[in-house]
Length: 232
Length: 232
Image (cartoon, rainbow over all chains, first blue to last red; front, side):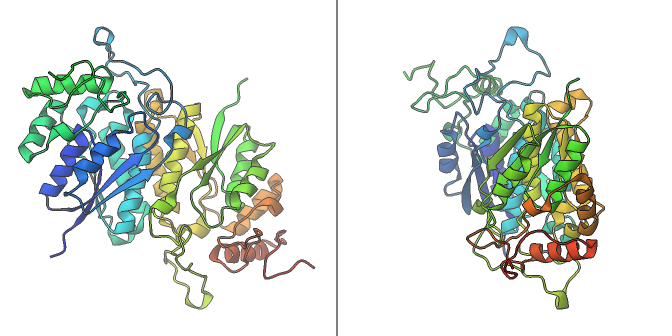
C-alpha cells in the first residue's frame, strides 16, 4: 500500500525534530522542509540535514530572504532580547520574533505539500512559544488550515488538508520526555539563536535558556556543549 | 495629521494597478510590494516600478524563488495552458496556477505591513480569477485576515488588521471602467504571461486573452501593443 505523504517543517531544534519522529511513527512518508531565511543561526540547517537523513523521503531547503523585511534581531544586527528572569513579562513579544514568520513558513509548506500531493503538514509550535510569539497560537493554525482548504487544489477534494500541531498544548520538558521515548537523539538538535563561528550554542540567549531549563525540569542531561560550559 | 499606511500588492497588471489608485484615492500613505518570484513574465516588475513611482511612499521588490517549488508553468518550462473557448471548463484550474502563490504573497505582505505598522493591506483578486485560481476566493482572504489578527503584533491591538479586496465581486470590464475613472493609465500596465524577449505581450495566453476581451467588453481600446498586432 502506498504510504500517505506528510510535510514536516524542520528547523533542527527540539520541537521540530520531535514532530519529525512523530510523523515517522505514524507511518507517513515524510518530506522535510527547512528554511534558509537569513537567520543568524544558519548552522541549524546543517543539524536539520543530519536529523532528516535516513528518515525522510526528501529534504527540501528553501531560500526565503526574510532579512528583506525589517524588524527582527534574528535576521539583522539588531541587539537581541535576552531572557530576564527578574523582569519577565508574561505576554512580552521578544525582538527575536520575525514578523509573521510562521505564516510565511506555513504558506510555503502548504505550497510544497500541494505540489507533491501531501495532505498533511506537521509543525511544532508549543506552549513555551505561545506567549512570546503570536504566530504560535492554536487558532492561528486553524485559520491557516481553513485557508489551505479553500485556496488550493484540495478545495475540490472535500477540504482534506490537515495542519497537525501535536505539541501545541505541551511545554518543552514534556516534549523532551516524549522525544526520548520515540528515540530522538537530542545531541544532534540545535536551538541557539546566537552561536559562535564554530557553531557552538551560546547558552545565554532566550532559546538556550529555555532549552537548558527544560532539560533540567525533565530530569535529563542536555547532551550538547555550550560555549559557557567547556567540555571537560 | 499623519496619514494611515496601507500595503498594496502590486504586480503591474490591470487589477493591482487599479487598487493602487483606489488606495491612493482613499488617502492612504501607500507602500507597494512587488514579488520577483521566478515568473516567466518578470518584465511585469519594470511596469510595476513605473506605475508606483510618484504615487507610493516606498516600493519594495521582494525576491521569493517560488520556482523552488514545482507545479506551475508560470515558474518553469512546463507548457502553458492556453485558453480554449471551445472546451472551456468553468472550474478548471490552469497550469499557470502557482501552488498557494497568493497565500505566500499575503504572508509576506502581512509581514511587511507589520514591520512598517500598516494595518491595511490591499490585494486585487476578482471574479475573472475566481474559478481558475482557488487562492482568489473571498473566504480565503477572510481566513488570512483572521490569521493576521491572531498571529501578529496586531493581536494586542484589538485585531484591527484589514485585508481589503475591493475588486472581489467585479469582472475585469467593470474594473477597467473604474480604473479609467480614477485616472489609471493602462498603457503602463502589463498582463501577459508569455512575453517575447523585448517585453511585448503575446496576445494569446490566458491572461492576454482575458485582458483583450475585457477591454472590448468595456468599450475601450486596450492601449498596449501585442506581438500578433504589429504597430501600424
